[in-house]
Image (cartoon, rainbow, N blue to C red; front, side, top):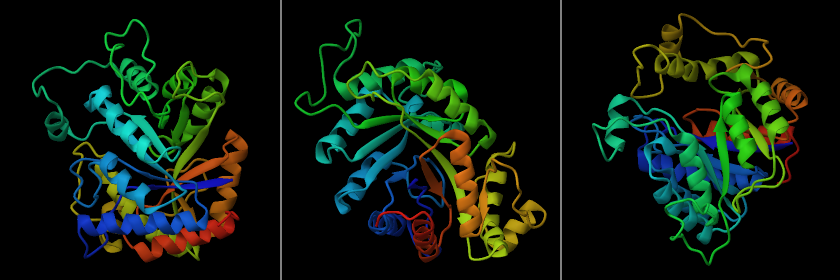
Length: 337
């Protein structure tokens, strides 16, 4: 089984955004040595304790500091941007680091004010045309826009190979099928609605057909992204998971509360109304436990879905603890260091 990392670039306690970026470079170098397959960075806006508003820029620093691990802009919130401009950035990365760049394509709200700030036309109604924007982006990545496209006459670095490799970020079966019919990779999120992951994976495999685009793929390629908190004991793992549980409870509340820092354990317990113990459900929002129990759960998820790769996110703000956990995971799964 392959393992990869999804890093939200949480700012370590007592550090700064610049410190978090430098920590991420060190972490990517370390997990490359451990045998992890990918190191993806997410795009968030106006999140005080995350240093990742421009992953398409930072990806160049990560790729330049490593030599083998695949670096992913995971993902581009395409609902905010011109597909042409996104493709120019991605094609530049692909030219600099051929065969090592992934681009995850998604959409999300950054909050009412941030969404408005990201637009060029601040007062215009934005249509729901994500499907068309995705297809246009894929066409730019391979310089094979259809003959009907008004932009057919222009290209991006036509002398370079197609790419980078595009992935659709999917929670629902609908998004998974879009990835399948376009012949793209599937980055299946088990964050928001983890119980949907088996259905999304099955829909993707059932509907997949080889891509007609030069930047696409000929065979299904998918991974499942999961939040994983491990420790030597179950009690320690459950304590480590409390701050991230509290953060997402507040983010998903009707008030959409965005905290300035990761809460302490005591603050998290107060927010959650007490300690939250890890459940035994097949598809938890947070996979919390000892290395052996987490390994068993991931193996079970792989058996259900056929997944051969998991991308883990821990949301911890202690770099030493994170690296310890990655070393433990690499050992448990026998990664080829």
